[in-house]
Amino acid sequence: MTQRLIRIYQNLDIEKIKSHLLLYGDLAGQCAQCQQIGIKLDVLKCPHCQADFQFLAFKNIKDHLPKISKILRERPSLVLVDFDDFKRISSANKAEEFLK
Image (tube, rainbow, N blue to C red):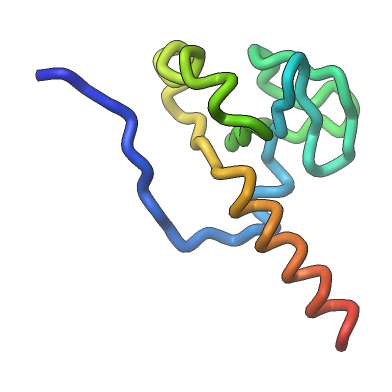
């Protein structure tokens, strides 16, 4: 039986995700909590704020598809988050807070 990646949708707290999220761009990552940049994929905690990375989001998923299976094998507890969903929900929350 061949295993393949498949998207699964869950209701999750965006603030919990943000406090444990590594955002990964073309060459390096950024801690979503403290905005520390230059973080490599194999780092388990933010070197600045010590947030443990439980979630990972790629800014451009298509560039990183070949790496994903390896990453999930090495770190099975890591949850992949869709960057566009994260960005959209975070922006909506900021707008709601602003309008209160």
